[in-house]
Image (cartoon, rainbow, N blue to C red; front, side, top):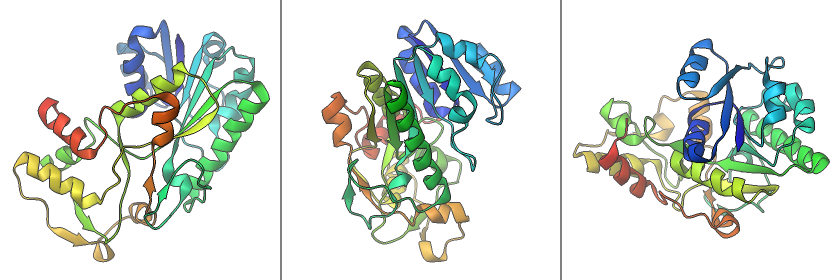
Length: 287
């Protein structure tokens, strides 16, 4: 297996580590020279790519790749990978492509349960761009016959990004908006879901999210209980000082089903709930 990754970030690195024993070679892109050096230290061939022009050496790497993961957000011009390297991908001999998207493409459903059959109705501009990028990759799959899995991720957390660390650093906030729920996904389960899909290549959309959508304050309160500390004071959402982006997340309220991921791929979650994940990180490390 020769894996190329556009956007070697948090989730993609977890996928690489999950596949280490199966990889003959792995390469990935970054925007910075400093990050490129750190990738090289981890045994990942680095390529610089900022999305505005083809990256040096990427066409040659894609020609030798068997699997591709795309973890780069689209911009106002569209998906940078398709724009800059679409022709190279058409000429490649790939057996699977994974595209990381977001459950934000569903928009708001006032707390109702939804699944992959629910029509997308994105609210924010960034989610509208994601949906356009998804459609671009689905069209690419139809035109080339290369299987493309679309993975709609919920709120990502894991070591270095979690409620325990936020409490420890004094950054946790307990915002209260009655009726609001969010889905989440531990980075281990993103890696596990991608691995399962790569073993059964298919052009299909999957929701990658845990079993239990819940109120954001519940996560903070449970983490505080584990640490034996008092939770931060409750803050009324309507009165909270939030950035426009942070406030926009609360405009979307839905419960997202992961049944297809379990049924179609036979995937079993390592961290099916936020409580299971926080319990694990509290014992093994959350930094």
